[in-house]
Image (tube, rainbow over all chains, first blue to last red; front, side, top):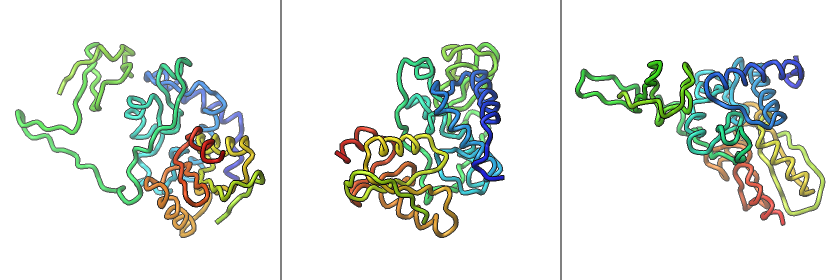
Length: 171
Length: 92
């Protein structure tokens, strides 16, 4: 099958799934449906080419280990949403952009360049307390106990849908 | 390298390095068409092996991050991403 031959029907189907999953987790897809469906087409094209949904806006190596960080949703989505209101592709956007209050703008590339990749991030071993050292703060949803390690808590808890302010610093 | 040419007003060489799947690349290409300038583009994701590598080395000369789109104007200005105002200004 030619990679260009992704049927509109299939794009529409996957678009609905991705949108539902996004919204279920407190994320929003870009409200420009044509633009977004075009990115979905890219994701499906990459799935055909590489076997996984590599970011349509980045050059995939075609090797899953090397591309792990750019399989959609990529490792950079959440910090880019925090800092720029959109992921690198603008497939995922902030609530403000989704609601049409502001427009997405180009997001600078956060992924390391080719020369700086493949350096495995050191997974910190947690020493016995009290000498606990973590690479990121751990946030706890005070409603359902969901834990996540990231710079800031998510806008909406993916489990119980409460808002950011319901999170407390846990570690 | 597979380079596609789009005819238009000559403003010096205008080379767009893009991905066939990327939304911002599509917007950049659309802007160049709207501006009616003469330009070339290549979809780097459709290249393979050494050819792709060589093109990436060229892209990184202008844009060390090697991201897309990268637009090179007159072999002297590199514009990274869909920076509409910058592109319009550079192609005035």
